[in-house]
Length: 214
Image (cartoon, rainbow, N blue to C red; front, side, top):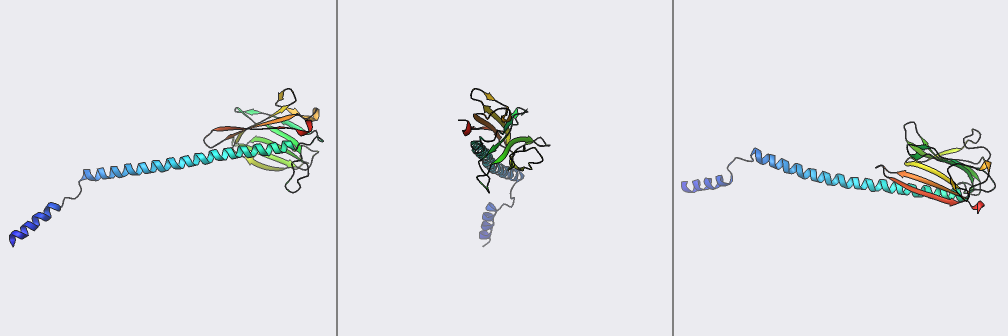
């Protein structure tokens, strides 16, 4: 009986020596766990960053396309009965801060047949940012910067960094135009610089002939 008990104790001790994990084994286990967590975090971070970059780029593309189509539509509606078209550019930090004002028949939401006087302009904020704004009024006589016109002002976009307007007279392109001193141009070209959150620039061109001069 004693011999059997001693044998059982010897066998138990072979599997349970009571010493547990050593400090080195614990350190190795923690290091391996940390490496695995770092790998998982790095993968997760890269996936999120790729998704954000794609979303930002898509926003820039959509903004450029929508603005191009909107401006082309308004230019197509320029009325030949009103010699109201003023455009100019100012270059700041390598980007053009253009401005263009004209009368169009592209229509209001409430009355699509009514003429309106509109203006697109890229302005700077006190913080140094840029905002593309649009003004519109049904007062066709007074300029939109006049107190009498009382235009509605809309914020169009905050990711437009450049807005250049150009006018074709049938021979050359000009950066300044005032129809009150002459006639309407035959064509208008607007170049829009859209910048995403990464600082990548994309150019969109809205070029349209004025129907009344064809």
